[in-house]
Image 1: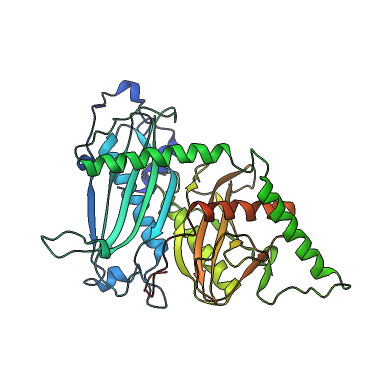
Image 2 (image 1 turned 90 degrees about the vertical axis):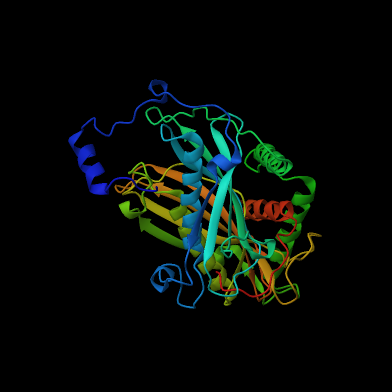
Length: 406
């Protein structure tokens, strides 16, 4: 369902200025806004990776691991399928945010995967939360066990009027069991938390007293490293934040468009940002990183087909602190949990106006102690923002062993 017509057909209609593909406003369409259940939108697909080596060829990397970036694309595409089951085809539904992607249990062998999802929160406004999971495909007639769930995530999808691109109301969700009531309550809590965090963002409020003290301590420490009159020297496992930064530039091609033909679908952005973050983590640590989680991330502006996408990845935080913070260390001795911040922006091909498209914060565990040293005020703000996300997640999920996913 990601693409419905060949790009060349949509392109010719656009060039000819025909009205054939002009979207119809929702006000002119009879829409069903009666309450829906979670089962109405439930969707499950099987990826027969163990049975189909040619399909596996599209999901595997040079180390024999499953490419998580490709799974992320599938998750976003499935979120779109689930959303349209809830809203119908008369609206335009886009990915507004990824609320969190968490690795529950790493994959220890190549096996068939089941990707499933459903709408778990919708109040009748324009947005809805779609919860998804990736699990080992169960035997026929059996249900997925908790230990077989590899990954869970939630996407926030927003429905727009196809003609005006303004938000439109969708059907509210009704619960039919205590389990569904719990999922709905979690969705409400996620919605309220996002509003609260947005009001406290560093762009809107100055660092608190504890954060200001930490910035001052870090500043004093790195000053000492440059002062020949002191005995302090930069630790061998400490890196300046600026030295960890890497970049990527890509032209957006129609092969990764969404069902509305001229915009790139969100899953491709997730894949691109994840793979750059993975590269940044490995280049900094000189080890193979293990993916832990993607923090809540928002898609700010759409990315048109034919535009130029700029990505910048930086190690913004580590649970191996340069100065004591009291945050606690989730990684074992000799390892670190590092958070990679990937900023994205888009320009047209003539390099005119630039727009931010989102910021994505990936957490990896690397088998090396890494301490991050910010040097400028902007870098201190990146450090504090990443640290807040680390604290919010409670030091990330419990550490898992082994796996063939990256």
